[in-house]
Amino acid sequence: MLLSAATSQSSGGVVAAWTASGTGVNEEAICRVTTHDNTTAARLSSSGEAIVSCGVDVALCATRDATVALRLQSEEGAPRGLLQCCDFDQSSRLVCVGGEGGLLDVWDCKRRRIVRTLEDHGSSITACRFDSTSTCVASGNAQGEVLIHKVRSRQLLALLAEAQQPPITTLEYSPLRPHHLGALHGDGSLRLWDVDRSTKLAKLGGGRATTDLLGLAFSPVNAKFLAAARADGAVAFWDADRGVCVKALDVGGRCTSLAFATERVV
Figure 1 (cartoon, rainbow, N blue to C red):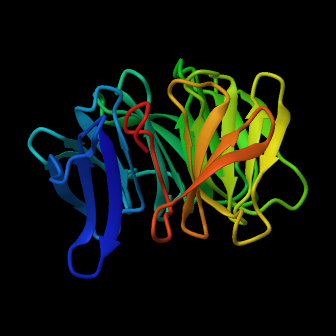
Figure 2 (cartoon, rainbow, N blue to C red):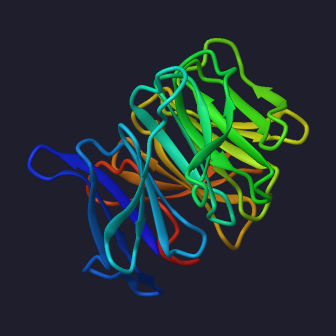
Figure 3 (cartoon, rainbow, N blue to C red):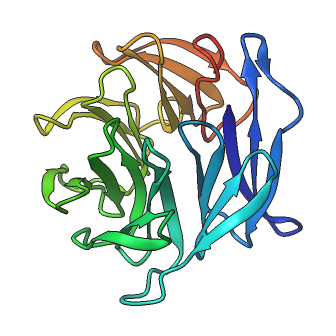
């Protein structure tokens, strides 16, 4: 299942979900729901049964009936501002959300309350992802830093950064190498990190229109390959181990995000 989120003046913030097969993505969305006036991000649960989206607050939707089932909004403490990223943990009970206020909140959806707040980001939070075990969460900020925290203890395990990095736009963990994390930056560059060792493995793209990267997806069947949308309207397939682009496909226009629908369909 694939998910998209977009905002227009006429319809507001709309989240839609599609199913896909080996022949491609189905033309009709199975779910389409307006969640906010301005929807900034959305994620599917691991089961595909629920959607979390964010804007001025957090909305939880059921894909089967395309309605907003629950809204979560902090009533206490420091202001959160516009929320810019969100993610489910593997159980779909916890949701992490971050934004302009520089606070990463972890919500318990069943209890409808914030159970953890991570406060040491130093600037606006632009991306967040739970790891495959849901014990840690990665978050990126406007200073180009990636922070890895233990969810339960709030302990900062790693700060992944280089000097003068542009803001983080996207974070993704590799499904086949769970300790590998891809961080996409605002200048179109992609850095691959080994989270366990706090070391940078590779830097891909950036610097020219033909190499600026706008989207990121790891292959679900080959641990060393990833796909990235390029600013020149192509989808590039990279061998991350060698740091080289092995194939590029023209998709006929500017592509800002992508995902593997199946092992052979992007």
